[in-house]
Amino acid sequence: MTINAHPELPDFDYVRPATLMEASQFLAQHAGEARPLCGGTDIFVRMRDGLWHDRYLVDVKKLDGTANLACDAAGLTIGAGVSMNRVIAEAAVRQNYPLLAEACCSVASHQLRTRATIVGNLCNASPAGDTIGACLVLGGRLRVHGTDGFREIPLEGFFTGPGKNTLRPGDIVTAIHFAPLPAHSAGTYIKLGRNTWSDLSIVGLTAFGYPDETAASGYRFKIAMASVAPTPLLAHKAQDFLAENPPNLQSFDQAARLASAACSPIDDVRSSARYRKLMVYQLTKKALQQTWEKLTR
Amino acid sequence: MALHHITLTVNGEFEQVDVPSQMTLLQMLRDKLALTGTKNGCNAGECGACTVMVDGEAVNSCMVLAVECQGANVVTVEGLAKDGVLDPVQQAIINHGGVQCGFCTPGMLISARALLNRNPEPSEDDIRAALVGNLCRCTGYVRIIEAVQEAAKRQKALN
Ligand SMILES: Cc1cc2nc3c(=O)[nH]c(=O)nc-3n(C[C@H](O)[C@H](O)[C@H](O)COP(=O)(O)OP(=O)(O)OC[C@H]3O[C@@H](n4cnc5c(N)ncnc54)[C@H](O)[C@@H]3O)c2cc1C
Ligand code: FES
Ligand code: FES
Image 1: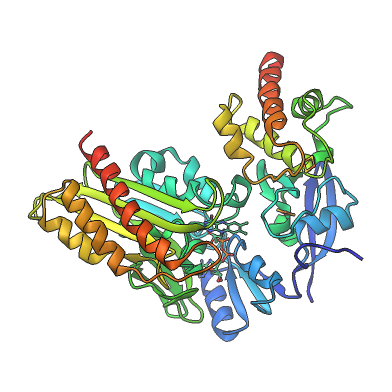
Image 2: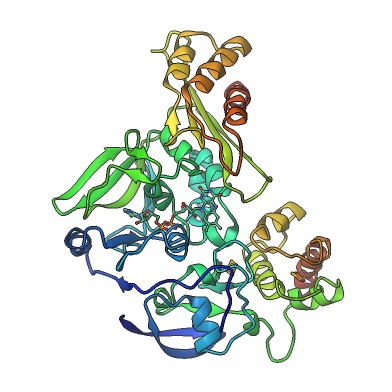
């Protein structure tokens, strides 16, 4: 008899359809008992823990362009099957979307990132997902294939609760797309964990800023918060405040208060809710200051 | 329960295996191919004892389905030594006493080999970052990190 820390995977059938339409139709026909599979790093954990009991895992990693990564004048498109390590290794991503590479680097370990994908991180809709903040502040849009064909949906509004999103049976996210970033933009991701490396976050704070003549302050900032609400979320009041008020230590402090007021954390094994709220205030200030330093360097 | 017939290369040998959908690469290596060098520490992607290379990349073999390895090139700890000569990372970990109980060692060696393949001159920080997913409960890591540094030097001298 083998005794493992975690049990082996339960029975299921691995399915690899030939086309996206075949995959969407299979998923729709087997709604409730079939699930798209990318890297499996969330799925296998949930199945071993007895939380998910899918009869079919439908591998969507290599279907019709889902394995592509393209960074050009039209922006950045990361296919669902592209691993986080591939994103990090791509020089054009590190150069033009460094925040995204930074967010990927903060996930788990090198081995796990060989399998884990950004699209899987988004679809899993964990409030703690480390790449979600960067994807939100950079204005990511999901390309989704369903039984009716393709549609595109903005990432903001995609998350509806812990582990929940707006996808319907048969839907497969094929890629996430980012428009070219505004000139002279900069961002910062601060992940507070129980240790420096490889733990899920207690708080994940992403800040992103760029000069914008249409804002009264001359700048726009985006602030995303993770692990402090049922879904990852943008701090809209803080963002609006910074569009109206000149960027300086006082306004960063006020924005950090607004961000802290906007989150609704819980007590869990990683931290108390109170500590999380306090840390959102501290880390928002810090992330805004670091972003500002990069913007004015 | 569907059985899948897959063909792949493991440590340079062509293999054909029938695997059920839910069988992991780790189970296939240990139970079907009798390659028991690769260890099962947690079966959850946490400890790195099961690390192998698939198409040159380090992965947790407990988090990969065997059926996904159709056509893949897999290297396990058994495949590191060539013609009886240890890989520089193997020799260095012996020289530095970077092995105590040895349970983490196969995964540690594969992660180190994958690192040196993609970055032949890693800094200490690069080494620490590459080994974050390999837990060792015995050595305290210092000797392992020194061993990887020595392996990088040794490899450079050989090339
Ligand atoms: C040891 C360990 C450590 C981890 N550490 C971190 C960490 O530090 N930070 C972090 O953020 N995460 C962490 N994770 C979680 C995990 O690695 C990520 O969430 C990962 O990015 C998920 O991607 P995947 O491709 O493996 O998804 P999968 O496991 O394949 O899928 C996840 C979910 O998304 C759905 N899905 C996947 N692809 C699609 C698609 N194309 N269309 C529609 N639905 C889809 C699946 O059906 C499933 O519900 C960790 C996991 C483990 C095992
Ligand atoms: S056994 Fe695979 S990571 Fe621990
Ligand atoms: S030598 Fe015992 S776990 Fe590393």
